Length: 330
Image 1 (cartoon, one colour):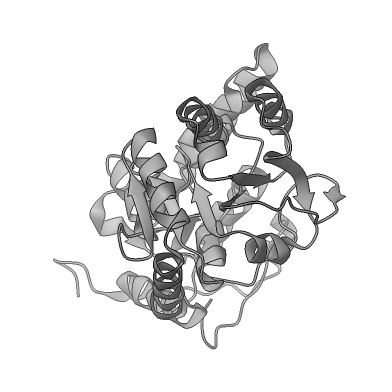
Image 2: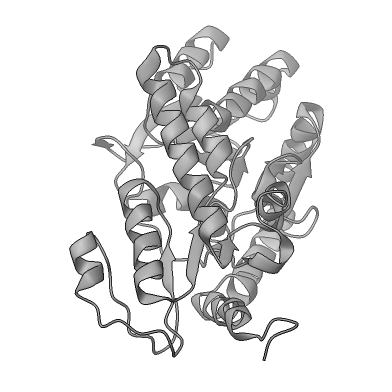
């Protein structure tokens, strides 16, 4: 993330007080989580008298509301209020907030003013086994146009758009017309809903939810197109993983930070509605050269904008804001 820093990980208040106290230099305390560790971070910045930097890897308040949806009782509400309060406390305490998405930075402008925020996109890193749940075999169905989705199944806003699209394509007859196969990888509490939709729509064996795939790279190699429909993601890794394998990406216009990765007509297609999704699938199904051109452009985009080196430079430039003298001070 940074070149040449001495990084110390703090896990308890005892770790804080074991550090040499210093007020000069370029020491900062950075937190990218909340709860107990967030409190440790705030305590460390106060004790060491150094700036607190908060690194957001998503939209915390949207995600909190999403996890609360469909749950009843006092305990989920108590957790929601406690976590949200801690997040707000950390954001208000921070000298600098690093967003991984320009979209989220704009949405939280009322909480974090421009002088205290910067955007540092996540870098591409080789995917591992990063989906929850037990792994399954990597057997994927053969067919015509092969669509892939890789997502968390624990949040409805990441699953509902895919189910809506599958139903719309069924009503249009595109499953047969294009001989579609769609694999939705991931595990979580909404996983079974994908299988139920396949049974209800009569497309079992075509719309497949294998759960967590041990070798996720094999899924990317299998797919012709990544279909990434979402209403929540800030700056997901999945589109970058697909683009590095030269796969075009289809996403929806209101997919938040994904729009900072996918550019319509360049490395994929941005669709306003499900009819445009159908048109994009038809275009890709009949034009392998188009898929290849968009795939190559996607890989170039990741290598140029979202490499580890690019992220390191952006992080360094963002942290320099902490050392620019404020107006009225020397």
